[in-house]
Length: 78
Image 1 (cartoon, rainbow, N blue to C red):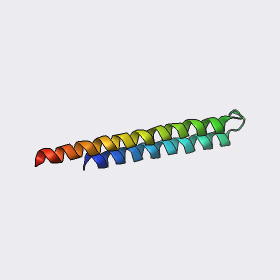
Image 2: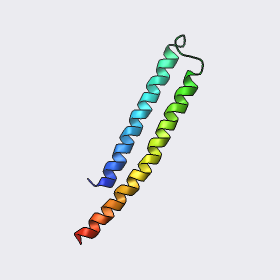
Image 3: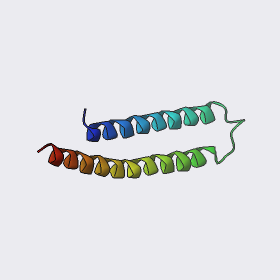
């Protein structure tokens, strides 16, 4: 497996994990409304959305770095 594929797969797995945490927190807040603050849903959405956006942006850079390393390795093999 190339480093480009590993980078994409790793970022996708982290995004799915964050989405699962987001769903869990959302269900937790809605199942216990007496324990959650009125802004709970908004705060969870902002926090998890920001985290997922950061990971997605970071993933683009990881992919570009992996692509450059793959090109350099291919040049060295020739």
